[in-house]
Length: 220
Image 1 (cartoon, rainbow, N blue to C red):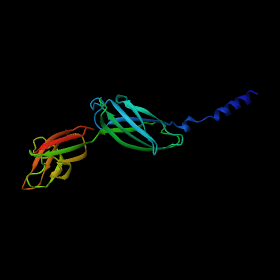
Image 2: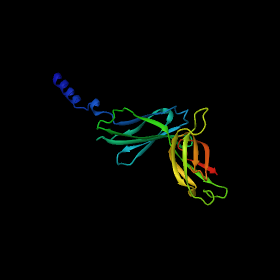
Image 3: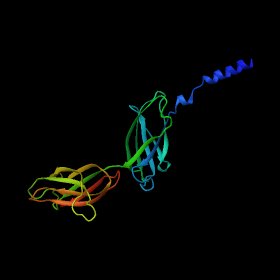
Image 4: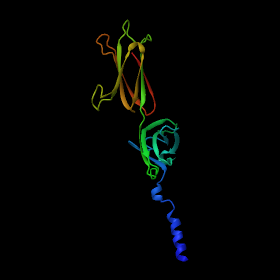
């Protein structure tokens, strides 16, 4: 009788789920910066947006210093998921970004292994405006194109412009041009008619901050 009872208990125990096979459907993330840390980059919080492909996204916000966090759980059937993130300063401005991670998980989830996110300085738009003293954007009785560019500052001890980051061309009459998605850093904004007569050229030193669009006004 005792032998039969022991066999019955073992049989019941053997029918239970195998945790190693069941997996772990917790979806966890951890983050680091391309350079520096939360303190040096003045990031207080990390906001993560995530969700199954084609479904409504969810958001989760964590203290940056935590370094990691749990988003939720993947579905019992697995599927494809998308994850993006931003690093917020004390005022809630997104200064850093993780553009996108796509992953496909099975019905066993990710086994709790965190998804790595790398936070990079968030690009910003640089809008350049120009005008003469009479309010016009063009020299007297002339309409010509201006090339407006963002350049790296020259190396120490050098003059002129460093490497071009990006540029665009606009008619002088538009009086404005926008250069999109400029990586944060120190630059020179250059406006140039590239014409011998009339020659119109002006430069301004600027600093682009992560996630903060910049307007540069040039009086010609």
